[in-house]
Image (cartoon, rainbow, N blue to C red; front, side, top):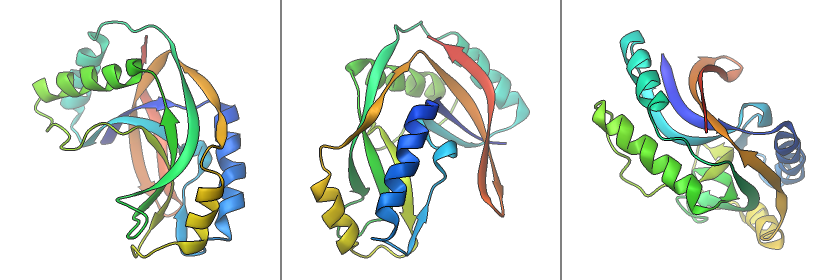
Length: 182
């Protein structure tokens, strides 16, 4: 199965993402917008894994030290790799060091199981749209600059999940495979 480790979003944050996407959509008609109900805060992408690896991942994640609940804020917007050649349009995530520490522990744990370390530093974000052709999004960028400090809300993180991702003609569908409380 195709798998990743992530934090699920509250219904309130999903609703705020949907409203914000609707406000941005006219500014970038060539974007492929994500479905807010399928948006999550990815901590580690695993890729295609076997049933045996699912068991190993579940055991390893269950063995991680507990973490105290913490609050993250969805705030600001940006582009990967940059606004001149965007491939991804995202909403930012402002979070305490606890989120980075959780991601580091997961990364270390998965490396011990043979999963390659991420080459880039952990950069928490929520993907709002993707672009097939990376060209400047002038109107979208202007809106982003006007709303640089816009907050879409806060939510508490007290758990994370192992997710399965299934590709379908309607886009990716996600299923929680295992839950890991803080």
